Image 1 (cartoon, rainbow, N blue to C red):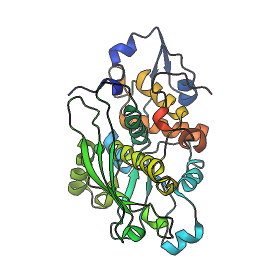
Image 2: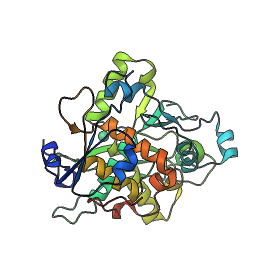
Image 3: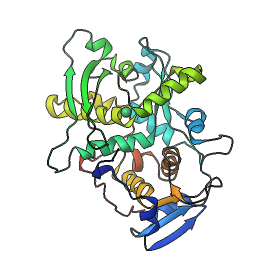
Length: 326
Ligand SMILES: [Zn+2]
């Protein structure tokens, strides 16, 4: 299994060879933002709270950011706050703590499983979108085929069959169905956007399903989105805007879209940062959960709009190293 060039990040050995090294154990976010391109940062701190035995347990049971819950469509229509307005409100109130992700919950329809979203996957989803912009021999593509002319679309949303490229070399695309896509400017859109789900499976998601059914009744009622699904929804937004001048999928988008500033920070985590916790003999790269915790740290320091309110086209982001400007 070899990762495609665009998604490769330096190994521990490569980062260890950087010209300058700095060890940090406090003011992590500010220190990471003040890095030089040729500098390696080694975090000497346990990022995952000690009451969780490992990263997986924290990902399942750690503290999550709760997007306000609605009880009925009438209530949602009356309040009229788009998902990004709700995210702005809660993201700007978070504490200086370790968070595992954010969640929203459907209040209409039959599948009322809590939907979990991880900032790390929002970044990886945006990166998959940027990958399709690469000028390489076989131009990668996120393929979107929508089904939105049935009479039920106003009530249940549209469906789409999506093909998303894999980040692994020589691995075929992921093909799956995305349902409950809000595309009509009707009162129902306020509920439809909370019901989004897909038929997608990948290694990340398989683990969650098996684990939940075996070990945890409460968590089996959860639906975790992965980077492929987020990339798919971003492509759906593009499809509706470019082909139909329809902004509803963007207006009702449930995924936090990173800014270039957040991408720069994420690049620092992936390309310049190692960690050595009390459990590690040697410095290693950050795992997904540790990156998640640091991304929430960035949101806490810099606020929602600077980090996850994208005003520019994410496809045009620069994913190379660039020093994040304070
Ligand atoms: Zn996936």
